[in-house]
Image (cartoon, rainbow, N blue to C red; front, side, top):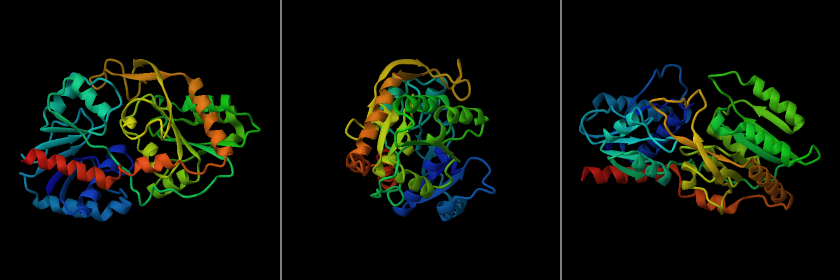
Length: 357
């Protein structure tokens, strides 16, 4: 199948990571891709994706305007396409209700793809009239795989951009409440925020936990992230909402124990058999005055709240598991196997074929 792909392909953004991995999977499966990327690609190191990006940009010089137009982008950025073939959009979001602007953008498509049943339900309840189908995102099993390794300390890992929604403050407070300085535990936080100075946050966390917390720069490659996960014991991801949460799935594929909220996109691939889940207690407006602003044309939804004591107790439970000598989370490994990028690409192509009939 031939397709025209548009959207962000920068490898340091979530949408870029999704698009690049799908392009690689499509091409490896024998499909023809022409890409029309958003933004300036100069001085970007595409690493393992370089040959795919080069070949697909060259292919765009002779693209067919009748092919599928596939856009991977925010839900408020879907009203453009390539050519006049069937238009399909793949989008991720973290709120429980879409604005009129977002609904109108999605209704301009012939097919809306989302990664989870939760997101599909949000689309339907928000008034999206276009057909909506679920196509989960994925991980690379050649990189994210189990290693039989028991760290010398029970290492809790937190990965992701610092923001209110990711709940780094709660992670630090729960860790402080769960353990004493005599417990054999460590919290490693890989966090940054290119839009704000978080040095004060780091100083505050360090003052709270001392030598039991380490900070590392944002991980530059998938291979580096995989090694970091393989050397840890538990990934902590108590987000107020997620569109998908790739690090959570990747940690499960590495056989790690995980803690997450029982809400939003990641419930597509994690459940009580794979993850210690934190139950929501209520919903609150999704506002952080940075990406999610009050009365915004691209935000009218909610996040959840939860009891931080439950997060604290889950951390203690993980430590007990560690002290019992259990190395790998077999349930997480087995459950993750269905969510590779290859399977994601196959599901998407099946949807393309359906709308082309």
